[in-house]
Image 1 (cartoon, rainbow, N blue to C red):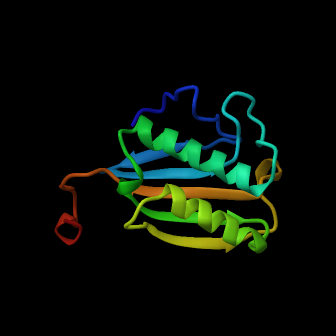
Image 2 (spheres, rainbow, N blue to C red):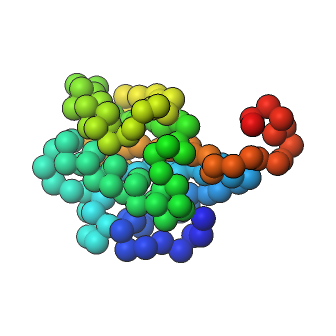
Length: 137
């Protein structure tokens, strides 16, 4: 994956990479519900925000010729655990089975006043030929 981004992926809100790839593993930094054009959180509450998070994540995966099927682990961060049912339902609509392993963590606050954030670990299809690969393939 290249560090050059399309207009459908928001710029990072700090000094970090949107994603890094090492030996076929792709680590995507946490994404919040930023509109890629305005750089602002989409208005309308946690449902619209998480829909934007999913759109942003799909754009990043697509840019790297990946999809949800390549994702092995997701982590969700919620400011309000009461939003879990809404976020969970939207996640189930967009992320196909078999679902990645997942953690959901309650946090006090997120950047830019976001209510939800999601990070992803994906693996590029194909055999990995690095050290320890006999345990992974």
